[in-house]
Amino acid sequence: MNDTATPITWANLTQLKKMAKAAKADLPNLTHAQRLDVMSSQEFGARHFHELKQRYEAHVASYVELNGFHHCRFCHLNFSDYDAGDRKLHREHHQRFEEAQLALGFLPLPVKERENMKRDFGYEQLYRGGDTAARRMGALAIILSHYDRSMERAIENGCWHNHPCLVEYIPCAVVNSTFLAGDLLQQFIDEFGELAGVISPGDTDWPAEVRCQAGPSSAEAATSKRLRETILAAYHARQNSVTEESA
Image (cartoon, rainbow, N blue to C red; front, top):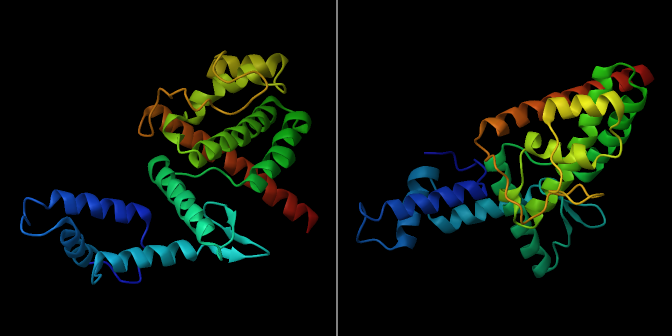
């Protein structure tokens, strides 16, 4: 039995509904709502399912801060918590991001951080990094910022299931790139390949109607996560180095 102080996520509620549905054979005399209450008590020590929903609402609210407007630190939506329509919009937006995080194992960087990474690390390493490894990492950081923006929009629009993992996205980004040239461009083609005709020229967003080939549990997705972690680690290391130099 879980501690009643444990935060309740949308994934918990979804899983509980599946458990209640599966328990129909064992509890044939109970309605689905009653089975939800039983599962809520057994799994989370709650009096009933409604209590869990209240705990979920409290968990979502814990991410919200007021700074001229209400901002959610998890799904990064700006809204008015005083407006019922906005609260509903935030709840739906938040749930989409929770669902995506559960399946993907990560969330895209918020706009400010990915723009900082692209400007202060990506382009800096690409044009001033010196050796090939530094320039490669700079180019990857730029592509990751584009990828995260594309993924963020896919989550917001409810079509992230069609969005590719990073290594599936990169060949399309290579074709459309305006910053890769010469030996570095050839290195990216040799390493990741190139795929024209998927993302429109001049764009960086994955088309919502095009379904990716590799799912979240694929080998490509695992490789993408490792590459993502490598890029972010290099970015954060550079941030720390700059901070120490200016101290």
